[in-house]
Length: 383
Image (cartoon, rainbow, N blue to C red; front, side, top):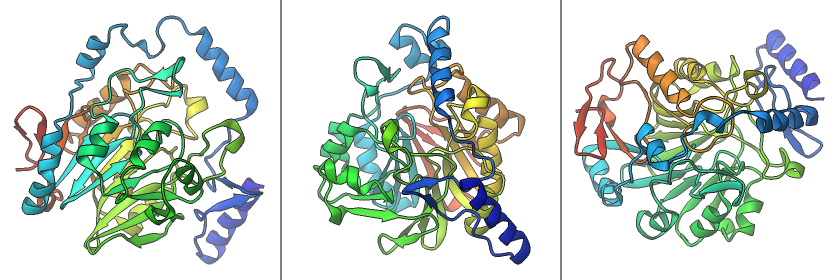
């Protein structure tokens, strides 16, 4: 049924120019991907992949047995909480933006005196505490520090997969009575069940744009992915990416999780580009025959960067859990290699978990960027 609707929409676009190709598609109470490139995972494929994983020789993802070696190879650091708090004033005063990657797609984004928490996940394991998958390096900030000291103003959730939205994280974050949750439709029920009040939840549909205060707006945008926390609730809620707009200019794109669709990202770029800064997923792409409809590779992230007209990106969604077959360091190495090949090392960035990336908002559109080091845990990209 989904393929039939996709063909109808595509035909209408070609004949009339009316472009509803990437509107929400819901069939029999479940959301579907309205993209020609998408292929749903079959039950047969699911079990074949589990058998392949069980037959793999040696540590999956090539991870070393010792945590201190993994920490060294990933250049992990413990985040400086005081610096993050100080940046609330500094960002507003000096017109800076800051981004702190906390593993997977979880991060803190700061602009003015506002803190946005993205895809909150502070658990040491997902799916099962005993069997994992387990976090391969510690989370750079504890959920306790987030709740008691950082106190984010907004919490953005791209979808409800357990590696993007933690159960215990949600319960702890429910203690923040003033934080607003911004989520795609269908996730409110899960939040309610874990203590989040309706008055603190903003549900959004694809292409919807909402003002959240006098300077900031949020746009909910399509991605090619899926949703569900257990097998039986697959696609009962929507999945998305988010664009933060400040004073009517596209400031930051949170990519969440997505496969590559050749026309989708061009359309977003036409509507909202140029975009100053973005976080795009670069991991969980192997084996390609299985992962390609739902995840992108480092090279595809650069393609999306260009099509969406994002000036600067960081590559995330890797180096946190072993969820696919590529070596755990490969996504970062491939992205860094391509950045050097393109002479764009200041525009295509491999972040370090825990380090604070700081940018001057006014200079972020320059073609050539100045990069300087400032103290141990700060990495300032613009003078």
